[in-house]
Amino acid sequence: MKELIGVVPLGEVPTLAIEVVAANITAYYKLPADVLPMRPLPESTFDEARLKYNAGILINKLDMLDFDGYSKIVGVISRDMFIPIFNFVYGQAVQGGSLALISLFRLNRNADGSTPSTSLVFERAAKLALHELGHLFNLFHCNEPKCIMHFSGVIEDLNKIPFYLCRDCARRLPR
Ligand SMILES: [Zn+2]
Ligand SMILES: [Zn+2]
Image (cartoon, rainbow, N blue to C red; front, top):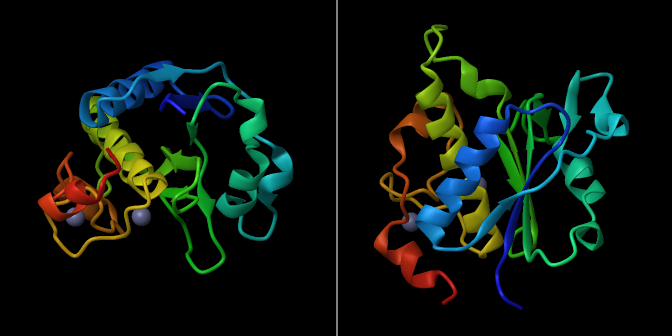
């Protein structure tokens, strides 16, 4: 199957952010990426105890059958999300699979509480998408700090990682 990536807003997400994510996917991975129409964010994935969306359940709600013609889907939400072992996650992906998710929620704030420029917010969103797509291409977390597959636990990590894969990870990318 030819690779065609779909970037889909789940609920209200700024259009420009979605376009920047799609453009960066094409620029870095050299793959076509389409901006898809908005889908509602399934409210059943909201966890009343943690007041966030459950990323694992949400990703399971994204059925590939709904995205005919697309080999990989990156869902984008504006709300906060978590997985049971972490208080929050920036992104989630099915390792080696077709579905990934990123959340813009925590990108609008710097570590010191100040507000980042819009371009920095977009830069962070693009890095998240490139990282989660790496998982879809079956790349794992990388120890090299100068690699998009380096794990980001806090916002400074996301600022530090580059837009590209290290040489080892790039070699593992499927042709
Ligand atoms: Zn990761
Ligand atoms: Zn790497």
